[in-house]
Amino acid sequence: MEDAINWALNVGSHYPDLMCLMVGSLSGYLLTVVLELWFLPTVTEPDAKRRQQGYTFLFYWLMATGASSIMWWAIDPVDQFHVRLVVSLVVSVFGFFGYPMIARALSAKYPSIGSAWNGHTQ
Image (cartoon, rainbow, N blue to C red):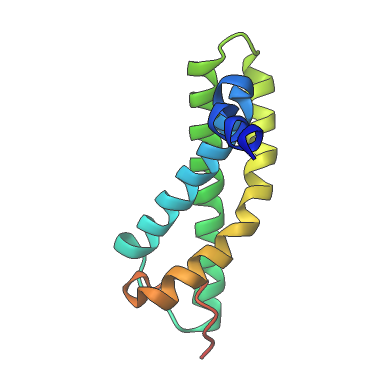
């Protein structure tokens, strides 16, 4: 148990690239929830929901990629730019698959978020 705790606490020092990708994904989640809460209208029509879901995917992808790449560059500048960018782009796409679950859970608890991913249909 102690080894597992030590590994979890030291993941950033042992695997800085992995930590950057995880924090980048978390940043993308948080920024996308903020986008849906404060800047996107609450929509109920299926076409509008689909369009908004596309916008949130693109926004998340750009924010998570940017956060991961910049953080990776700051922490481990030895890796080449194209490696950081391509890995961040690919991992961010896979990281988005967790966003609909997070958005549904947060929208159920805090309806003011008004996420297009809330699971409600018209």
